[in-house]
Length: 498
Image (cartoon, rainbow, N blue to C red; front, side, top):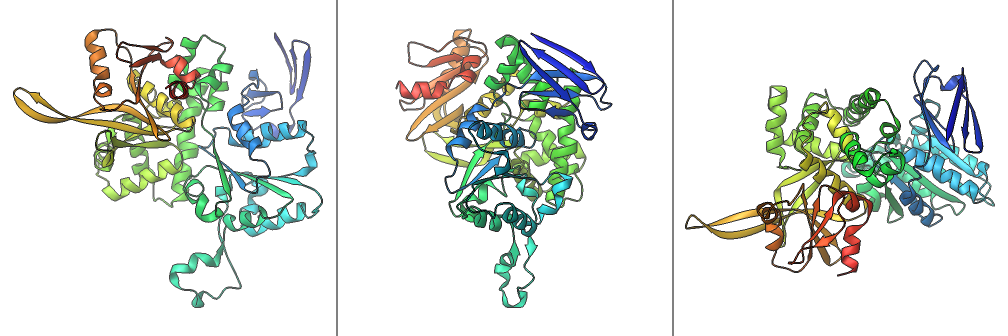
């Protein structure tokens, strides 16, 4: 039982037999939330009314275990993911708290948040390096170095270098970047280095090149359905409806007021994501980018390509953007973790199709907010949700295509039939089809046709709306409700019992 008493800026919370007293300092008045080790308090801007207080039970155990397993492994730990997905809280609050509980002293942490005004000067990699070296010069002590939003660091030209002596193709070597200082820091035996970043191009794609196999990436996603359910305080079926509508962005999940929840999700696009991309790539305006995001949001789970997206975006803007512009912008939104692409795999020909693929939204709440909570096609939302869960679990996922020659109206015709997901597990595969139901023989035949014509013996699963447990038909095709699929690793279960 929770008893909440509020007087001015002092809150008394009695939870069972534990009592927590939170006193808000004046400096926090402009913030939207306040975090302690035990809870998150969300409040309005005039600071007089508490909107909601919840016990922080979203421990993000999956990511915590990865962080703990990688301690002192000689590599820089790179925590990546979409902005506002909880990376900073995971590293600077949950992980730090766990280490302190295990005996690490508070003074053994060096923390820098490059998105804070007080730490802006450390966006200069040389100043960041000097600061960390100064704080950790005692080589007899071990330090944990936590750097938040490392992608905000800029490159600095080396003053003592003569540019005229350097070939043009090597001019980038005239600059010091955060890669240089991190490579140096992680070579120091008394430092264990962790960074967070919200741009995959600057981090994920360059880990091998810039960290010389000494970088270890941990991808953080919005809350999974299992994590969401742990704080939803509702039945599973009701929680699924909320999750399909509002997604798993942590602060949106904790917000109880529906209008504020929608406002927050809409604001993330305009105030954070689009602004970030425009600034990062020096775009003249955000018109084309906004139109592309709208087009992608409308077409999640549908086959598309840059030309189709250019046409859709053009109809929204009133002018047609170029193919190359759309192709570049697609890279930008993927680098910002807003959308993920899935390639098409020819199941029988064992090759990839180059021209058409699918895009899925990283978070359904963000996607729905972008469309003003219209276009709620349940089949597409469920497919997107399943894809996100598979990727979060670390699986490599493609869209499957089965090509068959059939006789139709007396003529032989080559047709393509889709399998929603080909999940690659080493040399093994699992085919997954997303379907709302198979209530009639005709519907069952339709949903399983491509699965039954793969020409191999890999396991096949149909994920249905609802909560039915795993079962099999007479042909060995497996069926399971989407709720148990999201709460359990059904793919691993099927592979291990194969």
